Image 1 (cartoon, rainbow, N blue to C red):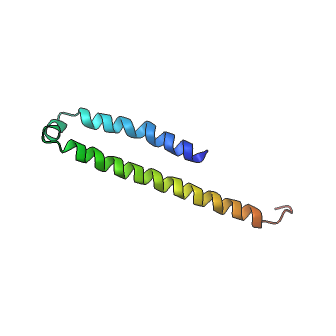
Image 2: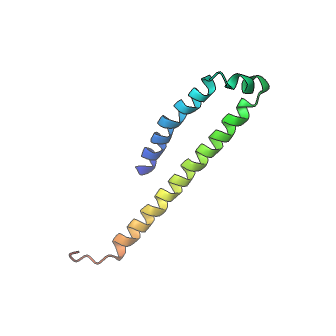
Image 3: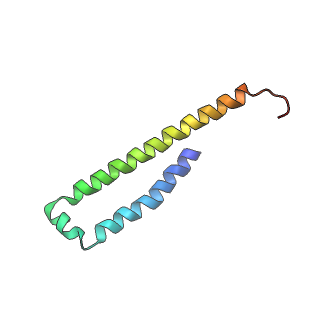
Length: 77
């Protein structure tokens, strides 16, 4: 469930930034030369890398929490 929240947050906050960056007048030169696609591609690679890292980190934390719950005695803490 945490993974869905992270993905949703990244998608909701990431796409408007990409759209806003493309609408700037400064991007017309990049668009004319075709370099805008390189910029968007690099941004997407970084975004997907961060999302992948967050998902793997979430899974590792969940495994550690489960391991701690199993190793904890069932008595009062």
